[in-house]
Image (cartoon, rainbow, N blue to C red; front, top):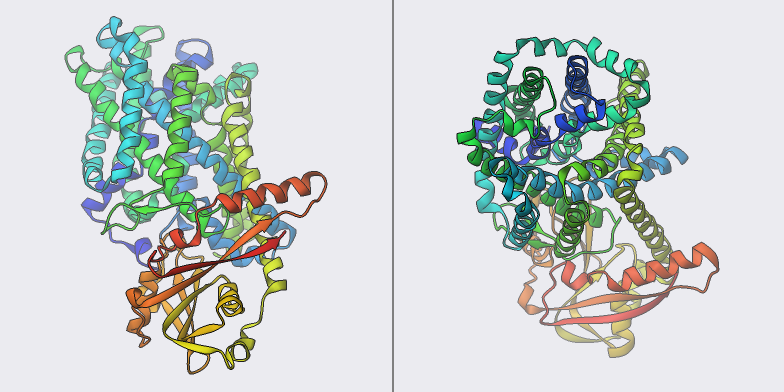
Length: 621
């Protein structure tokens, strides 16, 4: 087992996991129970116990069994998430034919829905926390919207500077949050201990049977308690699966259950629905501090989602599912600390639009959940394939286990579709548009590679191309998209300048299906002739590839190339769409536009601006 996946369980790692991994699901008590009871139609004893029973067993099966026990086994060298799962399954997908294409489609759909979930999470968590101001003083109700927007603006403005220093506080703050949830829940349970009967699944089943017409609506509301399940899997690479599991079983799960039971006990003792039950369990003197703590927890939950969006965007680019995006490193020590301006702007605009459009956490809850359950279902589908092909589990184990998980996922998916008219259509529409962009880019890149291959000169012709060409002093580094062919920039340089450097380095950047590559084996070098070297630099899909890093690795292997002494040549492909009719023609035109507006290779690979020559080649797709 490798690096992160095998990381030891230490107290700092467990505390860090509490802060980074569990922010999303940890803030669900702010709204989930209240919405579920409201969906049940009454605050009667059977309804309260039924809702609590559904939350307990849904969390047990969907989060504990599915993610903590089963899916977290599918770590790609410690990294999790639907794209890491796709990369882990790639070898088997290539041999799976149509099934493989279906599973790749599932991964694309899951990724698109994960992004759209990230657009709603900051809006609903921050707003639900700030709404506690109404309990402190009813006159403050009008301040909820501006305060929420102020917190959101500050949160997204912080991203450019990085979160390395602030992140050190995340763990301790969230530990205090979960302990507060547990203590307030226990105090309420002690006043109404009969609420513990809700652990019996009979109450949940009885509620659904008694209210068959409302069963899906109730389940859609209950699902709000599970919305952080996919996020904890996507974020587990920060600390490894063992600290994440320990944090869940020792603190997070017990605290969440105690608080949900405590909210139920509060309803039982009151005999009616209670506004903002999480806040109502807190003594009035401590309420302002609870609002501050809840707001801090919601910011941390939002930060985890935003950081996850940055990481998933980089993974999507490295796996060639998205055009190149500008990726900035915000920490010299932590490679995972990155900032993607385009994603930050997209999420900021979407979050502000959701806040202004829905104006309350109650309204936002109607739009929340439909996208993330889609991602969770896609994870189960891919997970079953990995269990069969990578873990070599027997079908007699995979079919009943993943059959149960998929049944649960698709039940919740069906339940969330009942919210389409109330706002769930918005994230689903956005996810559909993003899925189409993924598909257009992926098919367009395949056609572009095919077109370039038809135009390309095999690398075996290199010696013949350089025969009799005038040599000039220095080293020329030519970036190659395919190691088997002569770079188009080298061919254009010979055509226009009729010279070649006395030493030519053909550099290919290879993105592997593993998250990171060992720096010791960063490059492989092949000498093609006395003056020509072919270098392949290997980077993982969670790394930011760089020319300087590649050349530094070359020097360690005996090929002395210094960044400041070389000239760099980059072939830029100007894509033109053939005039085709219908959808196919539209696809090609959209791809050509996306290609032209993507971040250029020079910036993406951090090529030195000094001594850089860009030579264009027109290509038709």
